[in-house]
Length: 157
Image (tube, rainbow, N blue to C red; front, side, top):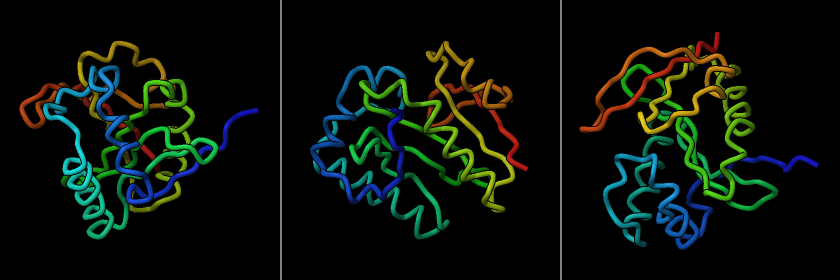
């Protein structure tokens, strides 16, 4: 039986759960902007920053649960005029990425504020077939906060 995927808010997740998740070297491997150590202060700042997005835009990153167990975080964040989708799963939940992304994309398609989604992936990500199967198309290679990313776009209208 497939696990039930649900979205919650990040403040509902225990600080130590996020510290453990974000301190896993397998998670950090594809996160070039992850250049600091995660501790309680880093989690508090991270969660507060994500909650500002919710207050400002009415949408942001969720805590992602599989059968009510935290498996990562992700969702939509407004970057200028674009809604960027990100997903950061715990290493033992990497296989849920496509399923979670499909659910998030269904949400975006139903939300009239989101005519398209962008994805920024580090060049270290070599297996991009799932993203392309979702319908995303390569746009360009860009620099964001001093790191290179591959930018993809998925139309939702």
